[in-house]
Length: 140
Image (cartoon, rainbow, N blue to C red):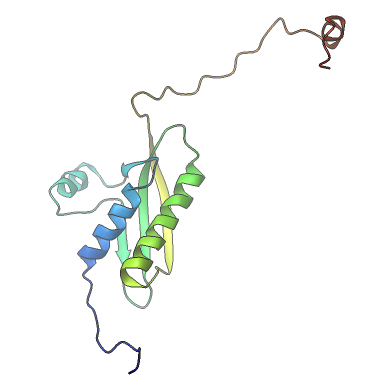
């Protein structure tokens, strides 16, 4: 017996979109998809449009993502995690990876419970090196 596949599979664009969407939303720091105008977001809520997610199928398999990321997280690391999650999910589900993934961070969202980082305040009464040496500690 040969171990070569003998059949074909057909995957719809909707199934691909669902796989990519679930992979992206599983990454810590991604709040959702950005992009689109108000009409596009309303159509997206009822399932008629998909703002923030574009798939191009043909000779190449390209994905464009426009994301909203939580404020205060390293954006580059979140984007790297998104790319890895999408590639992993598609490789496991389809045994094929996309040719390119383009990730754009459209918005930063302040999540409740996470305070924005405060600007560092200069301290006026810092000890000088002579005061530290005179204190009798071994730390210099």
